[in-house]
Image 1 (spheres, rainbow, N blue to C red):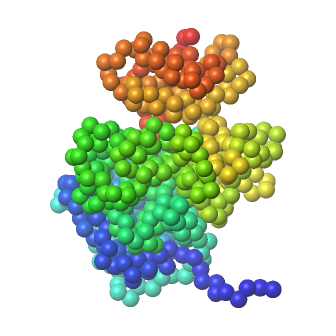
Image 2: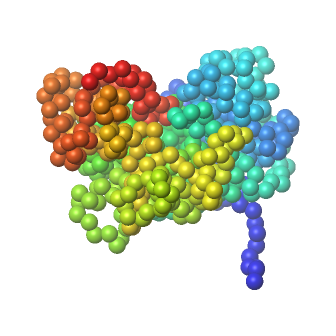
Image 3: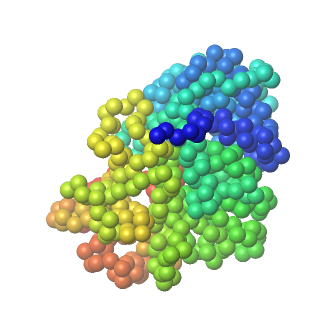
Length: 538
């Protein structure tokens, strides 16, 4: 027997229409390069997104054409998130922190036809413009400087849109957006998100036990819109009609705290290093900024140390861990405590620092090297996922088909365990786990423990070649206080770790540095550390 329900397609059109119809007066505030705030609203975003779609169609956009963006977080970028798919195109966000060669490779592989770029990022574009495939470039202008020859004003493109715009026919499985992986494990690979995947992802992350955005929130979107679909926050914000606060190019802790205070933000999302910086500033200047009561935050992109969760608790920030991948649209799990769990405080904190429970519609399993799928919370293996907003392939990259199993699961490349309650604990990336004398050592576990010591500001642990044990762990440390004695701190850190780890798991050496290199999205760049210390002498 077949069901008798309607089969309305799941498209971003419905989310845009909902925002424009029900929440037109709700603000979308963006910080400009001159630090002033530009105040728009969902009604304006709705009108301008439709005008952008009409303008792109008038400019010759065809169904499935890629329109790249090279922009910071601001309202015009939100308009591109919705306006390009509204025209039947695919919005492709370019990571503005990548090198010119990487940007060239990505935009050529994607076949980007058009580009929307911030005027303050024209120097970035100049470095690869001659090698790029763009037929036409539109510039989002914040200054009065004349445009370079051959480039066009974004506002002129919108002016070409007519009031009689009608959405083109699209299938819910058509691509609406595209992102490329960061390339930390090889060549960057493109993921094309369908309308259907984006709608389902938006519904899943909006739930109270997900990111929990609601209409009454004032949401600070720190996550870069140029990376990993901005964790789905623009689509979710439009779906529920929340106020969006967009920081533009200013992502330093003080600028973010000014927005949290000034716009009375009740929710924010960013990587752990963002929250470390904010916590440090709040601790140094108590009372300088007002954090709204009940302020909630999501931490993702890297493991969230237990020490950071404790600091945020004291500061009145309800920080929640999350895990995901570009290939998952990108949210996969988030960690909250079930009502049925009765745990001591130390155990509760451990659970909160985990990747957590899968979002609705996402399935997870851990597969050991023997191909079994244990569910005991102790056996670690490769984490695999599947679901309606998990990628089924990479865009035009058949060489990577081995990332999917024969029975349809995506191989994440993470080493993990799943306990009897369903909580996912990420032990490491397969490329970062340290193999010493035939035994595995989790670099993530060591890093989290090290960052729980008051003398440590940041810590990264890498495996360094060893003549006897194959690899041994080396800890790279940024001290919390520059003047601390190195030898004394080494002894303290060894004793600190010895209480939690077996002797053979402890780092054999500690190196103190001024800063740990980061990727373009704020993660520790261990590949550079491994290169830097590849000739380490034990």
